Image (tube, rainbow, N blue to C red):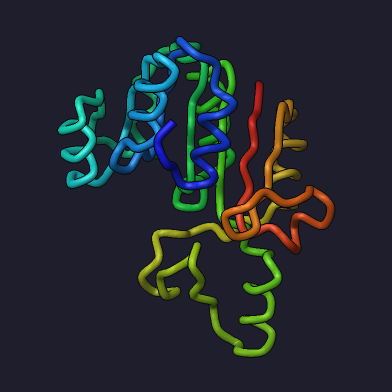
Length: 196
């Protein structure tokens, strides 16, 4: 399999071959290309950035330009085996509604996001008094697309309150997987697999 960002690699490793996948916020299509080439997956993408759409289409991928907050309603119920939302949840207007849409469209949903409760973020706020700029959160507070600062514990509560089933969870510190013990403090990034 081609080299993917660590959260995308976890997702790719856990998608069954020959599945139907909708990658929402697919970027340049790296995950879609890997799934197509390595697992014979029928992958489709939705991406807001026109440059990323062009890049993905140039790779022979089926990607349309659209806004996840608005355009997911056009997809029929249960049209995919998996809906994927990677590093996009925190940029959506209503993450709770987004999860409902993901699980309406897909039988299962992968969601990954940066953990805003990671100890480096906490230390930056505590000692610097400013919103942090890190490897996973590289933009300044006024230039970031992140409008919801979600933590792992916040997401777990959203899943519980929405009565969703959690099928899997993976946590990353740097580019390596870490234990779920104290993940809210120690993990920089989280990946969840959900079922409605």
